[in-house]
Length: 278
Ligand SMILES: [Ca+2]
Ligand SMILES: [Ca+2]
Image (cartoon, rainbow, N blue to C red; front, side):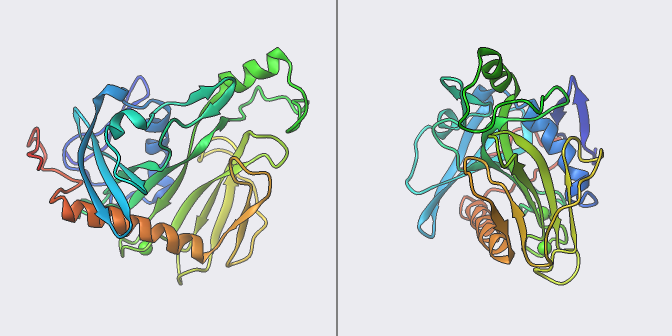
């Protein structure tokens, strides 16, 4: 029972009590990426609970039929019908990929089954993703697009997520898989793996991957305390630092606090069926 059952036409199916504890960020990422590519039906989303945590509102949503699959949204105001306002698939404004009405949400996981979230795939934006068919002649940002170029954008567009993990389960994030855009075009170029495996806030494992995480690797210009990247939706590079990890650790804490306030647990007993909700 304690396993991750994968792959029914590429769909991720989560069953029973999860025992993901042995899976660090690079091992767990492909499963979450598969879920992102083949999300559950929008109508299976159900809001379980919403609580004010500090100055923000945390909403916990579950996917009906998948006991252990949770989504959290953090919003400045209490939101009704969040299951309709977040979109699990890419939307379009004209030919521009977009995230939908509420974009501050993510898939959340308790890999080691201790009742606390330790992995968050947080929505970063929407954009086309470079694949093998990407041509280097594709226009730069601001240049005119042909109808075929627009077709390429629409055909390759998807939701993009940054994956944050607490790989040693001490409630502090220590690993990240970050979106890194083409600096000259609004296309996803690659992801960056940024990990502190030893002392806190020193990035001692940093590399990039343009395709699959187990495929070719890129080197990444960085220091022990700062990793530059090209964010989605912006034209200037930014950097990942210890502060970035602190800020997202606060989000992780808020989500776990919301579970406690809601008297819910992200994990459930194997075979327990539909859990009581409050
Ligand atoms: Ca956990
Ligand atoms: Ca940690």
